[in-house]
Length: 163
Image (cartoon, rainbow, N blue to C red; front, top):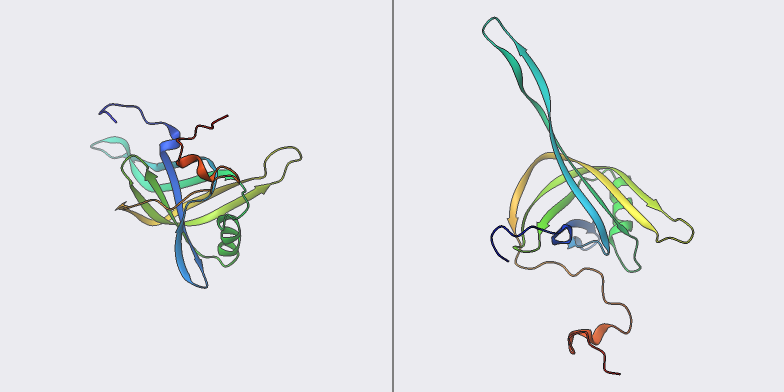
């Protein structure tokens, strides 16, 4: 990649640390279709005899993820369990070009699952940062969704089928 090259949305992914009986595991929710991070600050009006204007107030960071619910993905069930248990969720935002990013502990306020007739079943998550974030450099990314049945050998032939 060249300096100044524009990023595509697919080059940013979200990873989630889920807890279970065997401890914590960093997972890449299967079939992510979107995600966003928003940072905003409250505005405090300053008006004294010497000056007037605005200053920064409370800073809030939120994250939202969305994707397709996929068989074998531990993420949806883990989110439901963690929310019901009122657990914070460690969510990572990662640049796949460099494997750099940041993570923080989020209070997940919404986890919606939709099952519309004729469409894919989907999830969406909304969470608010608790505390601060920490920068991280990952050595490797967790695997995402496995290849579809019959597609496992594409890696060996460059994805080209021979008639």
